[in-house]
Amino acid sequence: MRLERLIFFRNILKDPLVEQYLRLYDLSRKPAASFAELADVYCLFMGTMLEELSRLGNCWSGDGWTCLLVERILADENLFSLKAEKLGREGLGTDFLEIAAQDLQLLEKLGRLTWAELTKQIIAKGKTEASSLPSWNLPSLQTGKQGAEGIKSQLYRHFFGEASWAQAVELLAQYYHQQGVGLYGKYYAFQWTGDDGDEEGFSPVLNRDPITFESMFEYQDEHALVIRNTEQFLAGLPANNVLLYGDRGTGKSSTVKALVNRFGPRGLRLIEISKSQLLDLQKIMAQLKDRGLKYIIYIDDLSFAEQDSQYAALKAVLEGGLSLTPPNILIYATSNRRHLLPEKFGDKDVTGMSYDEVRFMDTLQEKLSLADRFGMTVTFVSPDQKKYLAIVEQMAARRGLEIEQEELRKRALLWELHQNSRSPRTARQFLDALQGELGLQQLKEQEGIS
Image (cartoon, rainbow, N blue to C red):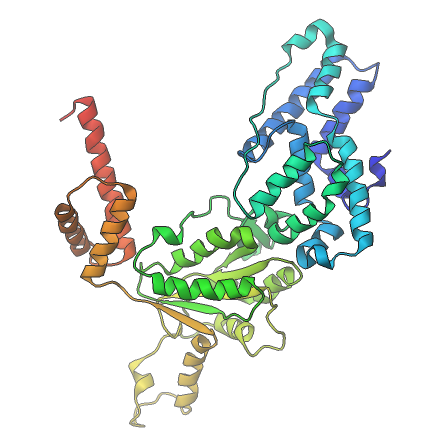
């Protein structure tokens, strides 16, 4: 009956795991409930709980049930959490904070009903049969990283401490503002779904590429431009949409992926869309514009054929449309084409004798205008041989490969020749093959195989 007084966090009661727990609690208190029925519900709930706890990694400790309830509080999308995500603690009125604190006080009653105490009740009901019920111990709390993870650890310590949960309301609002809520609070990268009649929405990237700027070499100047623009964006300062243009394999896509790995804890989220989904840009921005986090819409390998019409949708979003791009959204695109649309030698004919179109200059300006609407263009050029070898040597050192430098350089040049390509991607592929070869050779030596 107390839980029915919840206002902001009422949806937590509809969560399947919470419903299971409350059912188990009710059964444990009913004199007529049989131990067989209790044991069945107990084991079903315990299996579900262990599965969910395993996904939390080292961010949880103490009572398993309380951990999962806290996770639901941190992720719950409601009027309070969404307002805190967008405005922060300072933007919340006293009434909002007081109502949220009352909700937390009610949820504390549920959270303090620990799994250990509930198990004791079930064992007492089953007596001799209860010895067959499984149990487990949980590891100690990990401090976690600085930033959002540090705030999360503080919240965990509070919820497992002696202080009232209501006293954590301001820290909770700070967490929502920094880390976000719902899927955006749990994941850093997403893909837009909706092609071929699928349900439209954002699908989280569960196995995100862990690439970092520290693991990429020799393109520090290019990285610095993109990082600075992104930091301005996160700080709420003017920032530009970015076109990362250049040769294949030079790390354009990796640069964008590394951004979310560095700035995800500071509220940056990456939304990947394909060229075919450009017509959905207005729908995507409508779903993101009222959120409190910062979003980069990422389009990889962007280019258009002569008759493509999607570029008009992109142009309207970049500049020129009736509606402005929301201030919490930027567009970053990568391309091997500087001007995105194909150019022909005929486009550059200025003799006046071979134009296919009457308004030749209008067509040429149309092809150039799309790329110009990105406020910043960062160019990635294939490395010369010296720079390529430097990349190989730095990557090999980072991997700890034991090979003579001259042998490494010789084999890297042979690989480049065979692949007919010289780029950071070529260097990585070479080192993958070399590391695998050296590792296999070492295994054979250990096993005495020639």
